[in-house]
Every structure is written in structure tokens, then in C-alpha cells.
Image (cartoon, rainbow, N blue to C red; front, side):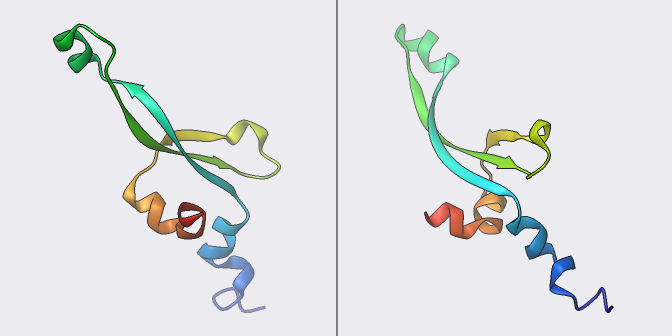
Length: 77
């Protein structure tokens, strides 16, 4: 088996097996809230990445531009 040319070992194949979802969430801006005296926040893009068979490996964090490029189909959805 040629591991360099086998699609099962490609980087895209590894990414394709993960469950990836983007979502927007309101995040409080402490500086602006204190400055204005009311709750102030902004909408930010977040990402969830779950590897099947690894329930404790869930990743939830702010999405980066690299995430949006790497998971472009999920980002477009």
C-alpha cells in the first residue's frame, strides 16, 4: 500500500471524519460595559469540533480565519 498516495491517509480525510459546526454567540465586552454602565457585547463566531469515538475530545472555541478556510463547507452552511 502506498501511504503517500492513499486518500485514507490524506489530511482532508482526517478532517472529514470530524463533526464540525460553526455558530454565533453573544459575548459580553467588559470594558465597554463598565464604560457605558450597561451590558454591552458583540456577536462572535465559534466552532465545535468533535472527533467520533472520542467523546471527551470536544473542542469549543472562537473560530479563526484558518478554521473557516479549513472547514469551508461547514462555514458556508
